[in-house]
Amino acid sequence: MAIFFSLALIYGLTYTYIFFKLSATLGFGLPSDILLGLFLFLMSLSPVLIHVYSLRGPEKASRLFAYAGYMWLSFIIIFAPAAMIVDVYNVIVLNGDYLFGKEFHPAAVSRYGTIVIPFVIALALNAYGYFEAKRLRVETLTVKTPRLPAGTDKIRIAQISDLHLGIIVRDEMLDRVIHELELQRPDIIVSTGDLLDGPVRHIGRLAKKLEKVRAPMGKFAVMGNHEFYGGRKDTAGFIEEAGFTVLSGRGVTIEGKINIAGVDYFPEEKKGGGRDEDPEQEMLSALPAGIFTLLLKHKSAVNKNSRGLFDLQLSGHTHDGQIFPVSLIMPFVFRYRSGYTKLPWGAALYLSRGTGTGGPPIRFLSPPELTIIEVVPSGQ
Image (cartoon, rainbow, N blue to C red; front, top):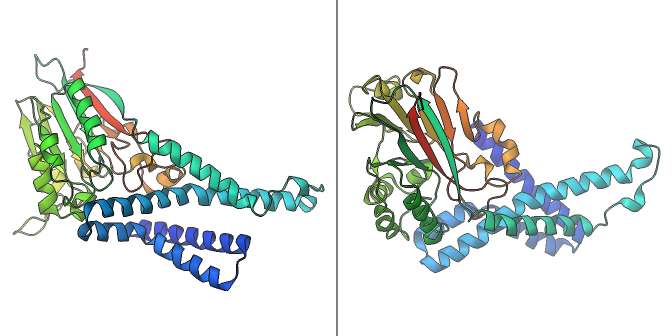
């Protein structure tokens, strides 16, 4: 909760800064300031308004509204820090005689330049980020283990995470993902949450398209926070129609070769008998010992009570910030940001940058990924 309020405060302060900067620089007077304030206030609410309208509005209008609101959001994410940097530069230059004993006034950026420069930077980086978000990368990881049964050469696992199928991410990105899955031919396909961005109202047909992608040892998924925002029953139905087995607080053993267990973003409370002290620990403890155990978990948090009960945790959720400079605050919000981390007791965590985009259809310095994990015997 503290993190949410901190981010909300930063968000609010950013819009306040933009209002006063534009008002002071443009100086059009009180009526214009009122209109500017109303515009910025409404645009600050766009993430919420987009979600509400997508539940009620027609598909094409919802998409147009979503693109406008989210592109504005991604623009502000880059514009505001760039404008702050220019302003700080000007403060230093205009006070050079006090700071350095020498005047640098001619090097100062003009009043309108303090808006034009960050505007151009934000526009250029968003244009680049729009295309970077479409360039799906295949990341590969090899995990060696003594816990594969004799005669098992390797198990090839494909991880999708944070695809966010919805009003923005649709056929084009899904077709890229399907194409790569067909090329990679994994034994197992897993989704570590936020396969959907929310409601399935406009995208139900995509489940059949994804269902055609098969994996000989099965397809498994857990629910991320956005699946819950879209309604657990409907989104779980979509995921199952797409051919995935939803592992909500349970595990399975496949062909005696590998255990796969799953934890949702919001775990369901068990009915009757009260709450377990640690459902994740209980679930993992019930799986057959001695074989490789894969834990699917949308959040990257590692449960200390699960120590020694899994070999590899696959997670997502962070998007690695998705848009720089948001990525700079990730270490303050999440202990693990992205990539492979060796855990102290011999297990490991792999945290995906995400396959799609959440909110703005932009990625800057955080390209989308589909991950291929090869689990092989230690001797190989």
